Image: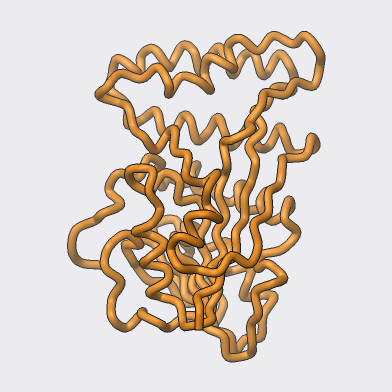
Length: 280
């Protein structure tokens, strides 16, 4: 896509390791909620569905298996490096580039019956999702559905498998972003808008259909903490040298502490899923 890249401040990477992290996050979301599309989202054999910020394209690939082949699915991302080549995609899935924060091209306006978003917390600027909400509304047909999933940090707690387990190093690592120098600091690391996502959607003119919250069950806590640690390590690569140097020792100590606990230390993160409908 030509023009200014308004998502240039994305805090995570696009390597093979980071693709694995994205796929694990997908499976954990799917396992927790039990579906790809919320039951309230109505589709037909002629539906047009868009996945914006498709990443590895794992969500639209799996969705294609659950819907009639006549349903067209379009996956969009500002960079498709993490997605499979077109030759390996389902016949009814097409991928293309799109900057979700830039002006939506004319040919994509009012086109889709369903638009899906997930994990835009490190993309949204200034703790304000309204520009993104307006763009997604622009892509929807009247009566179309927007489904959006995010991590909600509100209510996050530290859990241990064994009472009295040492957690000092893990707490220091997970809270490290609050100690960053001005050169490394980003409001995206402390964004509060996911906790108010349903409210934001309504303020944007959409009709809220569902607002579901899930807490990571104990059997998946170790996997969620794997995601937390990989994400934190990814984000740290963009910090100033002084912060990277401080963080390195703390991160290694946290990994050792977790290994000694047989991965029995984890920060829970609530998952939030909202469905909203564009008025007719």
